[in-house]
Length: 450
Image (tube, rainbow, N blue to C red; front, side, top):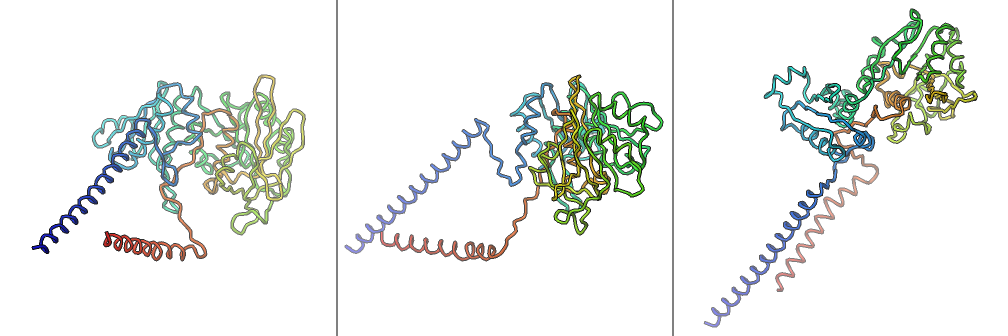
């Protein structure tokens, strides 16, 4: 009888102990869940968010924030995609981030399958397209500009911030920038060699035209920027005077030469640059330290502190300027010259000139030692296109052009070197399981003694 009573008492103690431990575990778990819920409610009430993605897909850039802060007109965005699509979620999140900066933007998700009339009305031809509208005008942003693809690697990039904010600036701008590419002297053709150049600029709200001075007495009256890209034949003295007059009224000019040829005759164009403190020399450049592939004449320039290449320097993006000729600075009164690109031996590849005028305007000239980096075959290499966008921002000195870096959906690969892989194996496969086993064994033995 005593044995039975003792056994019952022991069972009650064990049951009581189990209930005690179970109750403690339940209370602890409930407390943790409650704390997590309270923290989430507090964070949600204050709109606090953390972007934990490695590429910060959901974080607005500083450039984008600055552009949105200055928005003073209402803009609506219609985004055409399946509401359940992950890209739609990215756009929705982007809009919510933008809405924390400005209250002038609205977003509506349009399901193309349920709204075919709107698809036809806005002539939507690609998935993930958007229509951005203000009181002044509307602009369609194509899906392939929001989700970009690198066809050489198959990698996808989310460019929603850059594409949509640029469209917002375009539809609220007072005036569209007019850029003219001059032809008639053997320059690269806008429709044959510079199609990507044209597309890139028009995506930034710049209207691009071709024009020839050989049959015209003057430049178009609405010209903002003039580009001379790779001339083979010299400009006449009269044409040079037209360019000088354009600059002296506050015009902006990009002059990029071709490979140096011993029998070339571009003296008038060279003198034009030299009048603004930039000497174009008949010296082909090479660089044994910074070049592309095995070609020492395919230069990978060093960036200076110039605004044109500030973004490239910050993001550590290389550019490739093949077959450039040497430039140098010859100081001129009232002209400010600055080197933009140079070799590792500090030989200039690109130089700017600025002249402050009496009418509160500024004449601005960018001379580059070679134009091929803008050719369809080379403009997609590295950051070549960013040189043009940097030049446009420098020319305009305002916020009507943004150059926001697309964000990759693919995380950067982790490359293990040396004994790193062995250390990871040792820690993850041996040490951590061993620690868990020892800790569990100690806990089990301790509980048996209670």
